[in-house]
Image (cartoon, rainbow, N blue to C red; front, side, top):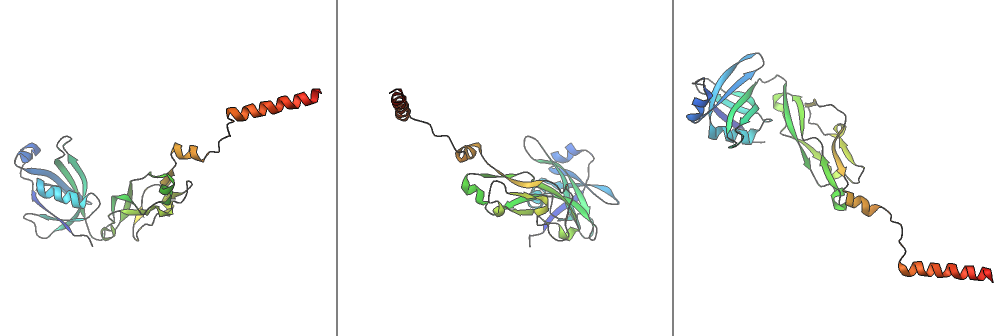
Length: 218
C-alpha cells in the first residue's frame, strides 16, 4: 500500500499573497461540499514534496496548526510560476469519508505490444480519465495492457478498460483509448510492386516480336 502523504498547513496570516511569498510561504485555500473556504499557507519545500507524491489523484492527510485532528484532502489546482516553476498557489478539496468524490486519474500503458516488433507503434489517444468513487476506492491510475495489440487493426476501446470495483468513469463511453499506428514506410513495404523489365529483358522481348513478324511474312 502506498505511503500516506502528510501535509502541514497554517492559517493564512496575510491577505496579500506577495507578502506571504516574500516570507517563504505559499498561499492556498481548502474548500469542500457544504463548507466555507479556508485560507491557508504552506512552506514551499513541504508543499513541493506533497505535490510530487500525491499529484491531483491521491488522497493526502492535511494537518492545520491550531486545529485538532486531521482531514483528508485532494489537490484540485496547483499554480506555478511559468519561468521558475515554483508553486504560487494551491487549491485543496476537503474529502469526507462516505461521500462520493470526483477526480482525474492518468491512463498508464503497461505490457509490450506485439505490433512494435513489426515496425508499428502504439498511439495513446486518451491520457486521463474523469472518475467518480468513494475516497477509499480512489485509484492512482487506470492501467491498460497493450499486449493485446497483435495487428494493425487492433485497438483498445473504453469498453475494454478494466475499471476497479467501485469506480465509475465519467468520460463518454464511445471511442478508443489506444490504437495501432502504421508508419508510411511499413505500408509501402507491404505493397506488392509490379516487376520492372530491365534493358536486357526489354531487348529480348523486342527481338522475339520481330522474329514472329518475320515468320508471318514468309
